[in-house]
Amino acid sequence: MPQPIRLKDHEKDARLVRSRVIAGAVVVVALILALVARLYYLQVIQYEYHSTLSENNRVHVQPIPPTRGLIFDRNGVIIADNRPSFSLTVTRERAGDWEQVLDIIVEVLELTPDDRALFEKRMKQGRRPFEPVPVLFELSEDQIARIAVNQFRLPGVEVAAQLVRHYPQKEHFAHSVGYVGRINEQELKKLDPVDYSGTHHIGKTGIERFYEDQLHGQVGYEEVETNARGRVLRVLKRTDPTPGKDLTLTLDLKLQEAAEAALGGRRGAVVAIEPATGDVLAMVSQPSFNPNLFVTGISFKDYAELRDSIDRPLYNRVLRGLYPPGSTIKPMVAVAGLDAGVVTPATRVFDPGFYQLPNYDHKYRNWNRSGDGWVNLEMAIMRSNDTYFYDLAHKMGIDRLHDYLSRFGIGQRVSLDMFEEAEGLMPSRDWKRARYRQAWYPGETLILGIGQGYMQATPLQLAQATALMANRGKWIRPHLAKSIEGKPPVDENPMPDIVLRDPKFWDYARNGMEMVLHGPRGTARKVGDSAVYRIAGKSGTAQVVAIKQGEKYDRSKVQERHRDHALFIGFAPAENPEIAVAVMVENGESGSGVAAPVVKQVMDAWLLDENGQLKPEFAEPRPAEVLAHER
Image (cartoon, rainbow, N blue to C red; front, side, top):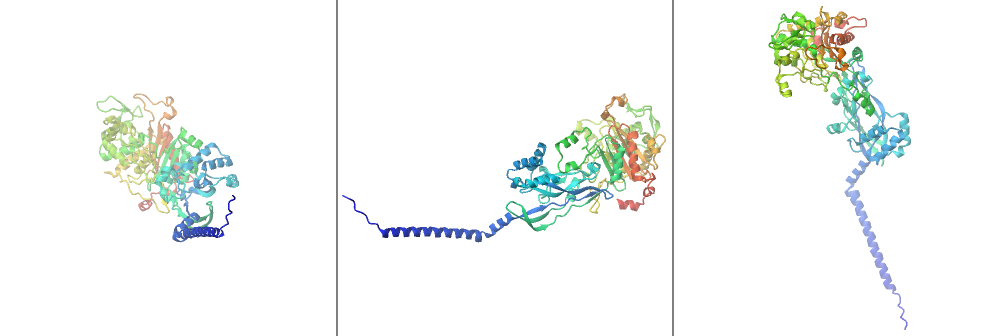
C-alpha cells in the first residue's frame, strides 16, 4: 500500500528561516559591538600608550658625536686633527642575517679573508641596540659606488660620513701624543654610555689618553622621522654637540726633528726640558711608528711587523725604558754627600785605580785602571772618578743615599701628565728584604754610588734630575700640556723643593759638571771645545751584561745588543740654564763619545740662531719676575 504524501509545512520553514536570520543578526551585532568595543579600548582607553608606541616607531633619537679637540705644538703647528672620511656601517638589528651581509660586502668590494675576520670581530664587540657599527673606514669613490649599486642586497648597510683622527706629523710624536683607537668591550663597560653615544674611538696612549675627558667633548642629539625600513625622512629637532677642547703642547716640532736627527737612526731616547717652567721641549723614542695605522684599526700584518720587530718601535723608551743611570747620577750623589756633611768640597781621596772596603780583598775598579791620584769633589765629577764615589757612597750609607736620591725623583713618577711613566727603582734595605729576603751588603752601596746595581731610572727621570741641578733644587714637574683652551695645567700634588744646608753646595756640583766639558781633563771636553756657550753635563755608561772581576771590557767579544748603553745629561748655558737634556743611546758604549754630541746638537738647535750665535733672549739672565710668571 503506497505511503501517504506529506504536505510541505511552509509555516514551519518560515519560522526556521526567521530564527536563523535573527541568530545571524545577533551574532553580527555582537561581533560589531565587540569590534567597536575593541576599537574604543584601543583608540580611547589606550590612546596614550599606542600613540606613544607609534611615535617611537616613527621618531628616533640619534646621538651626534662631538668633534675631537685639536692638538698643537707650542708654535701652533698641528699635531693631531680630524679629517672627513666615509665609512661603511652595519646595523645588526636591521641587517637580518648579518654574517651573510658581511659575505656580500667582501664579495662586492673584493676584500680578503682577513678583512672578513676583522669585520666579524668588530660586529661582535659590545655595542648599544640599533647602533651602527663601522666595519670599514676611508672608503674610496669606487667602493662607495659599488655599495650603492648593490644596496638592495645589503639591508642595514649604509655609507656614513664622519671625522677621523689624523696625525700629520706621523712618527714624530707617536710616543708623546699617542693615538686613538676603536673602543673595546672593556672600555665600553667603564665609559658613560650617554657621553660616548655614537663615538667609536677613544684615546689609547699618550696625551690622547691622559686628556681624553677634555679632548672628547659632549655628545649632541637629533630627533629624526624614519620610515618602516629605518631610513631617515627628516630631522625634527637637533641639539648640537659640544666639541672637545683644543690642546697646546710644550713640544717644539723643529727641536723634535733636530733631536731625531741627532740620534742618527740609532735606538735610544732624548728628553729636553725647560728648567724654569717644566715644559718638555722634545721627547724622542727611537725607533718610532706611524700612529695613523691604529686609528681605524691596524691590519694583522702591520701589527705583527711592529710587535715582532727586534728594535721594538712600540716601546716608549722615554717613559717605560728602565736603565741603570751610571755615572750620570754622580753630581746628585755629590750634592747629597755635601749636604749630609760626610764630605766637603776640599775632601780628597787617593785613587790608585780601585777601591777596597776595610777588611775585604775585593777590588772595585775605577774606569781609569791607572788611577787619577788625589781627587777632590769637583775633579771627581770632571773625571767621573769611580773610586771617589765608592768612598762617598760608603760614608753615606744606603739609608741616606736612598733618601737623597729619592728627593731627586729617582724611583718615582715625576711627570704631571704622562700616565705611562714607569716608577723606576731606588733600592733600599726594606726593598731588598721584601724582594729577595736578604740583607743589604756594603758592596751594593758602593756600586749604587756610581749608578749601577739595582738602581733603574727612565730617561725622563734623568732629565728631571738634571733640571733640578739646573734649578738648584726647585721642583717643577715636567709636563707635555702647555695650555687647554688657554688655561695651563695645574699640579695638584707638587713635590717639595730640595733645600740644602748651604745653597753653595749646588755650585760645587754644578762647577764639576761644567768642567766635564770645559775642564782640561774633562771626559767630554771634545764636545765642550766646539760649543759657543758653557755646558754643564755628566756622562754615564750603563752595563747591559756583567763583567767578571778582573776582566776588561772588550767590545769585539760582546754582541752588539749586549754592549753598554751610552748616557749623557746636561744643561746650558751653564750660568743661566735654559734647557736640560738627557740622552740614552742603546748599546752606544761611550757616554762622552756618543751621547754627549747628541746633547750638544739638541742644545744648539734650541739656543743658537741661523748664524750659529746664541739667541739674544738666551744671552742675558732673565729677571726673577719673568721666571716666576712663566712658572
